[in-house]
Every structure is written in C-alpha cells, then in structure tokens.
Length: 314
Image (cartoon, rainbow, N blue to C red):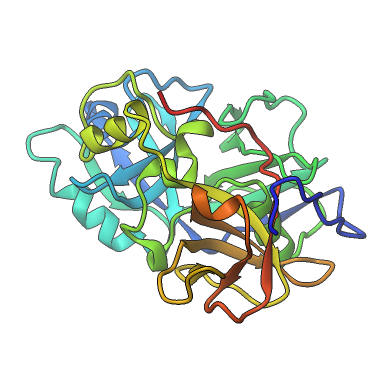
C-alpha cells in the first residue's frame, strides 16, 4: 500500500551551495503605467498590491479555470514587471496575454535574451534575502526571489540583465537543481501539461499561487468554486519510483488498468537512484493500493511527504 508517511530518501553528497543557469526558463516583460493593473485582471495572484520587496507565484488560466502557464512575477520598478515561466510555453502565452491588452497602457515582449536567469542553492542564497518564500531583494542590477526550499536547502531565483556579472558560487549540476525543484513540491507548468489542471490540482492555493480576495480574472469563478464548495478531489503529491517518468504521463491505480487516476507534472532523476516526480492525483487513489506511471504493470510508485501543509477547502 502507498502511504504519505513514507520517509524521504536521502541523497548522499548533496552540494551545500552553488549556482546553475536556468536555461529552461524564459522572461515576459510587461512595461507601462498599467502593467500591474493589466496583470491584475489576467492572473490568479494580486499584482495590484505587488511591492518592490516581494514576488508572486501566479497562473494564467483559460475561461474554464485550466492553467495555461505559471509564473514567478516581480517588479523591477513601478512600470516594469517580469514574468518568469517555462520557455516552451512562452511564445503562445505571450500571444494570448497580448490579446487582452486592448487599451491598457501596457506593452508585452519576450525578454528572454535580455535577462540571465540562475538558480541559487544553499549558501549561495544571499543572507540579506528575507526567509519567507516569494520575498524579493535587489542586489545591484539583479533581482533575487526566495523559492520554496528543498531537502532543507535554501533556494532562490536570480534574474539580471545579461550584461551583469553572474552570481558567485560553485557550479551546481542542472540535474541536481531539477531534482530539488521537484522535491520542493512547487510545480512549474510546461507544455505537456498545458490546460490539464485548475490551480488547486497543483496545490497552488497552498503555496501562494492564488488570491481569493482579488477581483476577476479568466477562470476565476471555476477556481473559487473549487475552493469554497469542497470539491477538491485532486491534489499534487510527491512520488518516488524506479522507472523514468515524464511530464504528461498518465498515472494508474492497480484497481483500474484502463482509466488513469493522475498525471505526472514534473519529474527528475534522484541522485541516489530512481526518479522523483510531482504528480496530480485523485485523492481517493492515495489511501490504499498501488500507483504506477505509464501503465498498471510498471514499477510501483511510493508516495512521499509533501514539504508544506495543504490549505483545507472551505
């Protein structure tokens, strides 16, 4: 039987600090007097109240509340907001967002080539950065955003113009960063899972990705109804397995070989062997029996504890 009480699997020799270039991410720049007001009407988080000392995790949803992209967004100044998202979703997301600008004083552009993005790990995270997730701190031309930790290690996103000096620190291998990203439990949407989830299916309401106090945005009614009517039947979980997993892959329960009970959202190789993943699952599939990625006769997936508490639906 799979159980959320399964202890985490130790990874020997984890680097205590370092930096890695995040080439899988890109940047949408939103400029103009109405930049914050425009995003306030499009994304799941509150950008009208966004200051210069904080960032936002947010989603861009369809009218049916399905996530089309996820972002870490922050202000570089009062007339410029950067949205960091998966590169594979950026062109289509930029096109869709631009359709809603209309008369707003806001200009959207792909600024991926204008900014360098790095992940900071452990001791490479500046001591001056506040400890709360999604805090922001300016280090000269660079913006540093506190991410959720993983395996007890601090993590941060570093964004600066390409001409700025890179952050100091030993190099961290990309596979290690990708694994820690999974182990943080905070999923970044990518093309294979485009429009597959409402935000709560990825626990976004529990990690600062949804505001239920702001005004309307595409899909807002669906997102709010899911939260307040007690209808949350899918959540994001962490799992470990022996076989490789990929985003978009179906997850099956051994009680039903035909109908999947979930989807792999994000996966990475475990440094000590096997693979870890964030999966969105029907909560009923996690209480007994076994889970399998791809097909029901594949290796069993073991549920791991989430590194953060879940908010209850209301």
